[in-house]
Image 1 (cartoon, rainbow, N blue to C red):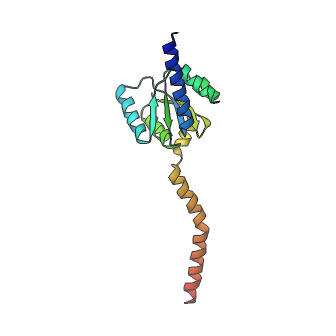
Image 2: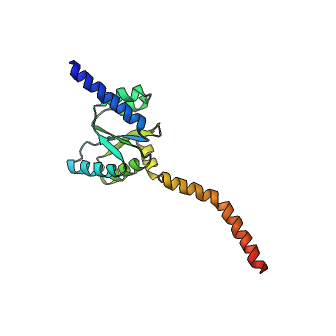
Image 3: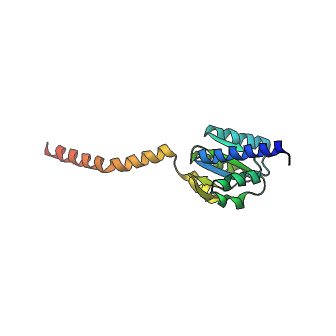
Length: 162
């Protein structure tokens, strides 16, 4: 292998390592059988949630993931894979799961969410979760409920004495 090719592969591996480090979620999907139009549609949907869809050599992805301690992904790195990286932990899995329901040719193999390994079913489960803002809203609602109940009780007592 000549030096130029070796250098370009090292650059790709280093770029993939950077993507692994910076993403909140990452998915490995098999796209065999999808048309160019379907892939373009998927890319457009993923771009809306700040995710990138790319095809890389499995061996280069394996080197990058092993370097960062994600060797559990190795068994999924065969076949026609695409790699999706996203800064949003739940947005990208939602888009992929929705697209996979319509297009059975897209197979969710595995991924990482917040640095933790999940298989294809795990990605589908993450897709069912509300986004970050929704979770914060639910949490604040839980915190507010006792105070609201107390305020309603005090108001009811005050109204009954009038």
